[in-house]
Amino acid sequence: MAFNPAAETARYIDSLGPAALQKAADYTTASHRMMLWGLLVSALVTWIIVRSGLLDKVSAKLEKRASALRIWLVGVIYFLVSSIISLPWSIYEEWGFERSYGRTEQPLSDFLMQNAFGTAITSVMGGLFFLGVYALMRRAGKRWWLWSGGFTALAISAMLLLSPIVIEPIFNDYKPVPAGPVRTALLEMADDAGIPHDRLLMYDGSRQSNNFTANVSGVFGTARIAISDVALKEASLDEVKAVTGHEVGHYVEGHIWRQVGVFALLAMAGFYLADRLFPRFAKAFGSNARVDDPVGLPVLLFIVGLFGILATPAINYMVRQGERDADNYSLRTANLPDALSAALVKTAEYRYPRPSALQEALFYTHPSVEWRVRNAMEWKKKQLAKGAQEPVAK
Image (tube, rainbow, N blue to C red; front, top):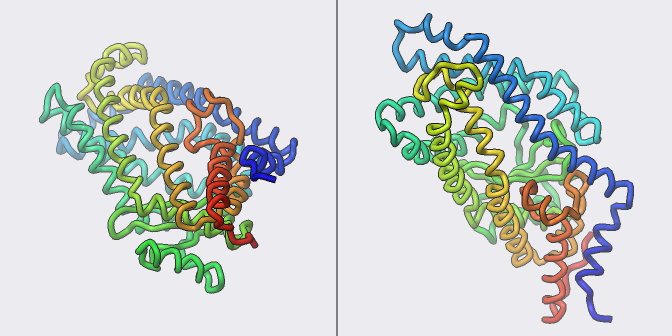
């Protein structure tokens, strides 16, 4: 009987069972609704901070201080206060909601501690970033939004460079993959791709999430591939190799730079809209600030955030292209279509595998699991036609 990619794809997806598929559908739909609720929370937080006059008072007290210090401190205080006001929502969105679907077992105390660390980092770094943005407003005049694209690319690159060595170790423990068959196999893959052995790590991702995942982070000398302990515990050797091949694809093909470029352009567009729409939004929130006044930062960020949500389909399209390329890289190099499919099905627990075309276009950062498995099965069909049999997954 001829190999049937469609039938094999259906078999893989259906192996989850009706209950798991329904749960994945419910989780995914609810996650997408959270975006709208998050926007409403952002609007409420902006309104509260603006109406309180807090940033105006802080700016007035620091009026005699150096301009750079005043702008930075206004930014730091805004990020701190907004995080505190929105903490109940953050607890629900990032912890309670995930826990209700069995996606995390992280204790609330640990979540709150890590949230505090994240807030501190965001406040300091966010304040520095907008110090640069307001400096551009003063020096570049009406074209500040144009220069902001390059500045955003520079800031993202700096964060990518520093994150693996300064930020990520605060939240997780990164270490070499333990000695054994898995490490041996992965180091062989690293050698084939020209990746130094110390760039291939595992981390305790189960601390925050039960999701089956791996990632690439960093740039230049800090770039690395990290595999969650969840993936290493739940996957067969071939599945780990297939997933690692996917991440090697991201690493080798430099997908991260594509994303930096796109985000820089989007930042430029977002700041352009903020520059044009700021007076209207400021009036709606009850602010008298100008776009170049740091006390107007809550309004500026709300406009940029709103644009970010509207641009989500474009961002997701770009990310999905990179994911497709990485899947194909894994298929070309590891040639384990069944193992890749089995691993992908594990991610369907938190990403419904059969979305509508519209749902995928609007919300999915990855191609649907159904599409990805079908792609792997089509690859397998081509290899079978060439007489190349896939090694039996263990």
